[in-house]
Structure formats: C-alpha cells, structure tokens
Image 1 (cartoon, each protein chain N blue to C red):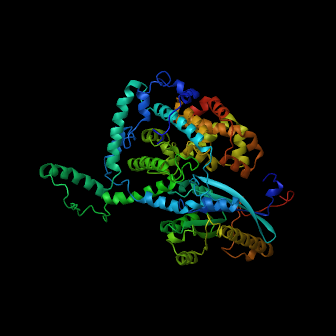
Image 2 (spheres, chains in turn orange, purple):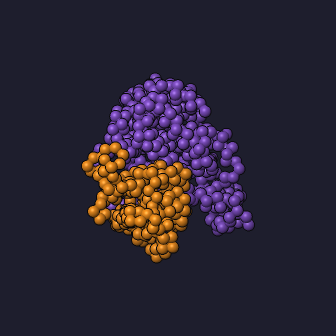
Image 3 (cartoon, each protein chain N blue to C red):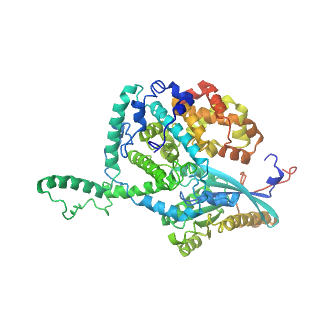
Length: 215
Length: 418
C-alpha cells in the first residue's frame, strides 16, 4: 500500500458509491461532506469523480473513499465498473422529481447485481429544502426503504441538512458489520452466520490497516 | 450569441498565430464587407446552419415529424426555479468580468471562423462563403421549422396558410378560431409509435435533461450562465442545436457532456462535423467495439507504454489508476473540462488542424498530459494520482502541446487506422 503521511493514517478504509439519476445532487452531497462546499451551478459528472474523508467511529479512524458516479443512463455500462469493492452506497433521488424516486428500484437492482449482498445501502431523498416543490412524500420513501431493507434519510446539500448524518450512518454501519465479522471470525470461525459477512476480498475496501511489519 | 454585441478588436486577429495560416483571413480581413464579415453577422432566426443536408435528410426521412416547439414551458419552469434560488447564489460578478468577456468574445470570433474552416464547413475559397452560408442557413431554418415545433403548431401553420388564401377572397380578418381535426390514430393521448404526438412527448425527457445541463454548462462564463437575456438567448440556441442533433441521431440522442463540446450557438454544423469524429464514444452499444470508448482508452495506454514504459507500469500495475477513472472524461469531452477557457481554445486549434484527425491528436495530448506530471505521478499512490488526474493542474499549455506533437508518430497512427 506504500507509505502514508500522518494525516492519512486510518484504521479502516471503506469504499462508498454515490448513485442515482442525473441531477439529483450526488456531487453536491459529496462536496458538502468532504469539503463543506455547495454550488448551484456545478457541472454534470462525466464518468466518475472521487473524494475522501476520515471520521471517527468509537476510537477508530474510518476513512471513506467516496466515488461519485454519472447519473445518466448512457454512462451506466461504464460506471458499473466503479462499483467493484464497494461496501456502502448512498442511493440518491430528488424529492422534487418523482421520476427519480421511481428509478430507485432500477438503481437498487444494478447495485445488487454488481456488489456484495451485504453492502450497506442508504436511500437518500435530497433537496429537502425545496419544501414547496416536494413530489415524493417522506412516508412513501420510508415504506420503500423498509420493504427493501435499506436505511433512509432526507437531506439538503444546500442547507447542509443531514448530509453529515447520512454519510456517518453508512460508515458506522459498515464498521459494525466489519468489526462484528472480525470478532466472530476471531471467536469461532465455524459459527459464522451465513449471509452476515462482508466479502473483504482482495480489494482496498473494508481493509483493516495492519502495522508495517506484520503485513 | 456574441454576434453584434462585441466588436472584434483589429489587433485580436493578429495576436493569434493560427489566424495568419488561414487563407484570406489576414490579407483581406480589414475589408469588413467581404465574406469574413458575413460569418459574424446573422439574423435572429437564420443564425443556425445545416451542414450536411443530404446525410441528415437521409436519417430524418423515416420518422421525424414535428415534435417540439420553442415555448415548451420547460425553460420557463427552469427559470422560475432558478429565480427562487437566486438570493442564495453567491455573487461572482466582479470588476474583472468585462475584460474577460472581451477576451472571450474576440477569441471566440476568431475561433468561430477558424473552426468553421478547419471543420470543412466553409470551403477554402473565400468567394464562395456568402453563397454557402446563405444556402446552409436556409436549409437549417427549414430543418428547424420541421423538427422543432409541436403537432398543434404544425396544424396552426397549415391552417394559417389556408386561411390566408381565404382572406384574399373574403377579406374577413376577425373570424372565430378554427377547430383542428384530430384523427383517430394521432392525438395527444395516442401511444402508437408513429404518432407525432407520441414522439413529441417521448422527447420531453431529452429536452428536460438538456435544460438541466444547460443550467450548468461552463457556469463560470457569463456567455452561458446567469439570468440575463443574453445568456438565456445563448442557452436557447444551444438547446435547439442539441435537440435537433438528438432527433436527427436517434441511436445516440443526447448524452451528457455534449453541452460542453457545443460551446457556440452558431455551430450546429460544426458540432455535427466535430461529433462525426468522436460520436462513437457517446454510443453505449459501441463501448466494447474497436471504435468505442473502451478501446480508445486502451489505445491511450498503448501510446503511453510506447513512449514511457516506467510511467505506464506505475499507473497500470503499481497504483492501478485505470484510464476509465480519469481519461474517460478527457476524451469524451475533448478536454473541455480540464483546462481554462483560453487553454481549451489553444488545444482545439491543434485538435482541429491535425491532418490525421481529431482523435489522433486528442490521444497524443492525453498522453502528453500524463507525461507532463510524470514525477508527481511516480511519487503518488492511488488516491493522490487519481486526485491529480481528475483535477489536472494548471501547467504550461504550450509545452504540453509541444510534447503531444513530439510523441513518436508511428505508435499513434498505426492503431488509429482501424
């Protein structure tokens, strides 16, 4: 993994993807979370963009590597390659455009086709600040999230509402799954419950950083 | 459009070396009454150009009737939404804005002409420009009339034509509005594939997407952004161009990113010609074919390997920074998002004037971009390298283009002759 500077020290590295229709605010959620910035006039994402931020969970440093993907249909064939190794996903729709909520199902399918079944998914209804334009009710989205067994939150990247919470929640949940798995494996490998593990695989994600001599 | 709003300073024409290479620009440029002037003058409606009459007509023959009109309502809605948000937007307008605009205006006018010439839209013979322009603009106007109006508007126009005949006879001006006949097959609720109304509604999705992207095309340049009537007019023009292209090319329609490449409203024809060289990258079905984007990306890696194996190895194997992660945008957008506007114009001059074609030079420049930050890449890990390449640093553009031109030519032209 090479040498890391002090500010990049972390205990866990998780890969998280941002997906959802074009124009729902994925890039602004990312810039709000990683740089505390928001722009009404940001450019459309072509291909993929990428940013990182570390947070503390318990006494551990969790570093999130967040991949912001293009939303338009044409780019899906290419963006699916970006899912590899992802252990978390924020599936974003725009609360003022119902069609973006209708498409959540397709995104979910795509996500499950390309990632590990234990990926932590949060449904995110963005642009909650535009109250007078709302087209998707909180109840509908909540019901959908329960049915599909995903987490759910409404956010506003513009007003910085719940953005921190949404990312932190996803990262914390991944951390719980990963640390529980480590615990279970340590205690009794044979008792590992089926379907409860995250596939760490050979990827950078969900990797516990080990000391320089123990690797 | 910039037309009529900015006067092109005489010296601006001389500043740029490429201008002097173009036949008839410098020696006759001072004479504003010739074809040169014509390029920059245009009427309100005839400022669009239909380049390739025969080819376009062939594609449009089979199904396109009239599906859109300019008063679609979407634009107004978008504007209202923008207005509602306006107070929150940070004020970017500063004292430096005017001079930047002037530079862009001068630069764009120069580039308009050069790019029209280089794209083969205008013939090298200056004497023919006036005739070509008039002909092409008439064709474009007709195309726009046929494709950018709603079924009801077509009916209205047809009725008006009938009425005006009747008027001549009866002289009756203020009659009741005529009812339109609605056929069983074709009405606003029809779902038949051949229904003009069905097609009209199907395309609202494209129009919607285009409008969203136009709101965020080069947001830092006043030519496109803001609520001024000037920028609205530019956006409307670009909207027409992108819509027309989408309707004339049903296999490709509209793909995000086209709005970046299409930066001048008077350039429908140039846009079509430009994309004819790179259109396969926008086509999802071709992703895995020899002309698709994935193969272009691997050609970029081949080119890098041939010119600098150490850097190639470091990117491919050591840090695993795949070209999909950064060069996808470089190539599909012809580098319009990676550099400052001035630098983009320099790059496009080189792209369009390259005898081996746009794609050949594009790959050379992309490869040169990697070579120019080699030492930083070699010392970086995955994260650092990806960050560097997704936010390409402000480097000496002249040097970059020189490196691109100096790349070993055989390695580029061979795989590209596919």
